Image (cartoon, rainbow, N blue to C red; front, top):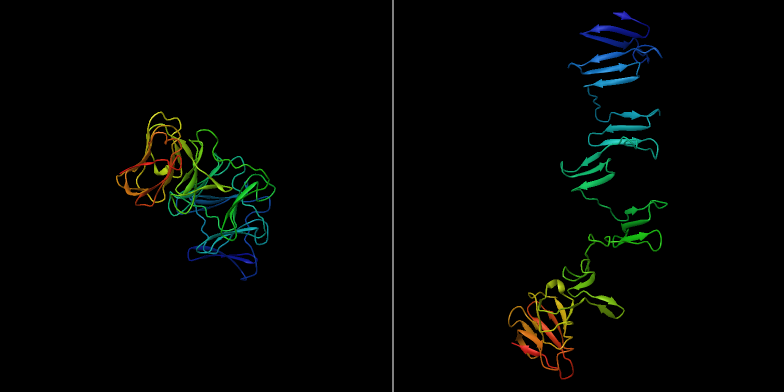
Length: 345
């Protein structure tokens, strides 16, 4: 057994032991001297599994060797007495804490950067940052912004940016706010990649919609666009027979440009569908149910169709048709007080 001042080395049970001569005296075992360090190697049980202190490189190297910190053990960074940043695992969570506010955690250096992936409940649900493409994307993972939390765009002077959108603190409205007046919100580009936009009412059949391909603002169901005391309807001229669709609901159909009889065939009965039909030429106009005996009109509860076909009483003849789910109800508007609408039954 060798003895030194304050430190005792001894061989004990097959182990070389370094210990203080007087326990708790704060003595140290030092290898080398300042500016004259010593390389040291600790071998593992497996070849090339080593821990190496490279004195000339001032580097501690783990080669195929692991570091295992137990629960609540600390890994610290920085020159502070307790470290400036701490990392530990508490048995459930990996905690990274800073001892001062506004410390930064930077991934990459702006030239050589990382792709970062955070997984959800399985390997296909994830949020990923792709450094080479400068994008952050989500795959089967939702983003949930709670009340009074906003998403902002632009390089505005503060966190609100130039435009922000948020579900307000009362939990009742979705607010989109611009930092400057006359800020423009574009939907589509004006070319072939524009959007149809729908604004729903009380149910899925009542809505206003912008039909991009038709360059038209339309109505569906009983939805109306009120302008003052008036409403706007989608007006379409048909010059040949036409099968009306449920998507046409709210539309006004005319016969402008027709040079022969025009027959409008109604769709399958669906409650809430409604249309106007107006004859604007001196040819017959017919509005027919798609199933016999399912139309109700003046003095007939089982009509098949209605028509403006009486000579000199065709132009200006109109009928308002709507469905209650079981019948088509046709309300005639004649060309004059004695105008004739023919009922076929």
